[in-house]
Image 1 (cartoon, rainbow, N blue to C red):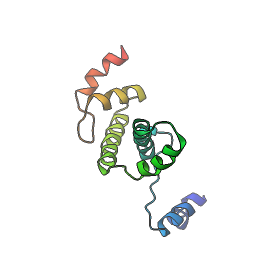
Image 2: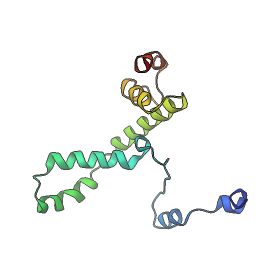
Image 3: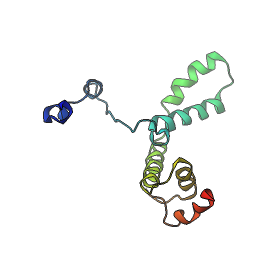
Length: 126
């Protein structure tokens, strides 16, 4: 009952209030969908750059980690949003996780999985 009350619906979570008061944006992403979660893509980008530039010593890592964390390019974030739109389109079409992964990797259409994708998915089923 409480969840259906208008004043309860309009109340922001405390964490969101704290984040926004600090001058940041707060985004709540779908739970348990790592392919739709920006932090997973960001963390993967950071780890890849760290392994390329690191010599596995602690002093180098201590300097390198903050530098890489601050160096994330804007185009990587844009690529995330394009990819997440394609995943959401694939799930809306009723695909399972394996089929969605295939569709997103094969079809690079803007914000959706191409119509021919459903024909190719027969290969995964059979």
